[in-house]
Length: 306
Image (cartoon, rainbow, N blue to C red; front, side, top):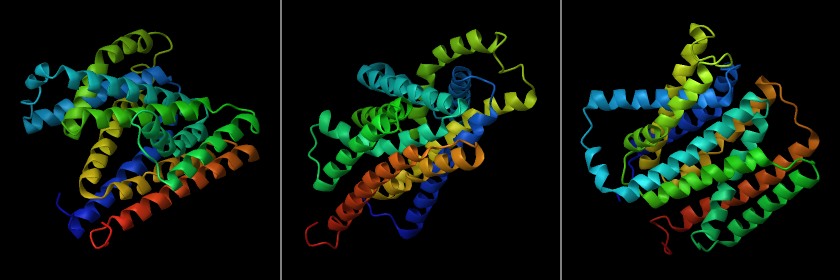
């Protein structure tokens, strides 16, 4: 595997920050889509993402990869599982934002790295290093504190962390057999029939707003496809150019921005107990970040132990 040249690495870092910054701004976008409900937003997001992907494939004349998929049922099964998990993540996230619980969503994405490490132990039988064990333990303490001291079980946060961690696990199992654009196209194509049914049931009832709340609101729902596809493609570009440890550290941009959006823009009030819970989670993340940096340093090419 080639070592990224400085210019290539710089482009990767820029793409990574772009992807995570755009994801961090999603609360503002979804709040602007109100009073559309989470299912209607989800359906629009899936369908317009598929339209955008199909348009890009048409421009590139990149269709040859589709026909061979019929001979790869295991790949289709894996992508289907990934699609269902990411759809679950999307609808829970949108429901949190549109119901005034963006801080819960931010907590979920702060917890995601810890959930990913825990899944590695439970499902992949991976051996953790001491700092990783410490991070998982602190994460469990944070969950316990938020449940008992704050008096609220962090259902939304745990659902987001678990669904995205499982999505990453499934994608890892599927492997890098599909480029990012192909994978996103296939995932949204699998979800499209259900999304179309949801849109018919919801959007064309009195509560539906896809085509009934003005051109600007409809434009926002259409734009959700672009907003979904662009950061995913930027992330794919970053992952090809920069080390995984760098991607892991950049990912904290998203929940930080989500939390800032919740408090500074969407006027959500966080009681002291919630701030203490966040602080405990941040200790766990600091442990994970330290472990990642030390591991990268230990394995660098110039290290005698590498």
